[in-house]
Length: 112
Image (cartoon, rainbow, N blue to C red):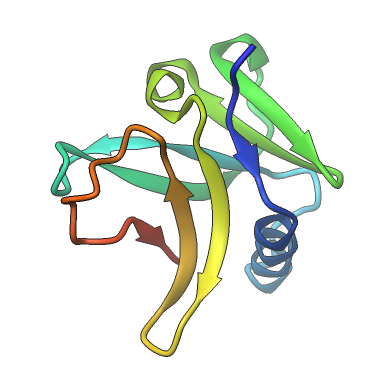
C-alpha cells in the first residue's frame, strides 16, 4: 500500500532539532497539513509527545524515528517524501509530493 516516506537526512536533522529543542527522545515527529498557503494548504512539521490514541494517526518509522501523520492530512501525504534541503537561501524540511502542482512557487519548506 502507498504511504509517505522520510529520507535519512531528514531523520538525522529531525533528531538534531529534537536534541537542540531539549525534547525527550520518545517525542515523535508530527507531519500534517493546515489550511492556507498557495495551494490551499501548507505543510506543518513539529514534535509532539507520544499521543495516547495512536489509531488516529498513520505512523512510519525510519532509523528509530517515528513520524506521525493525522489521518485527515494523510490523504494528502500519500506518496510524499519528507526530505531536508539546505541551500544558500534557506534550509528546512521539504515535502516532495506527487500531487503538488509545479506552478506553486512558494516552495514548501518548513523549518524550526
